[in-house]
Length: 90
Image (cartoon, one colour):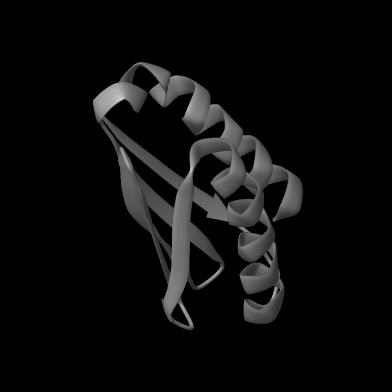
């Protein structure tokens, strides 16, 4: 299953980068995912049943995640957790 989230923000690139680092540090513990910055505007992540990316675009972020395997039934829960963190921090 796919999760797609677009979120608008007026924060600077540095603030968005720091917020995303915090979001995925917290979510990595919960869902056993790892990630890294491929370039200053692209964060890629993966785990046993999750992979995707977050692009920092003009005025916001765009997230695309693919959830499969044993985590597929939890896609709505994962999407809510990610949305909540993005809305809280960005």
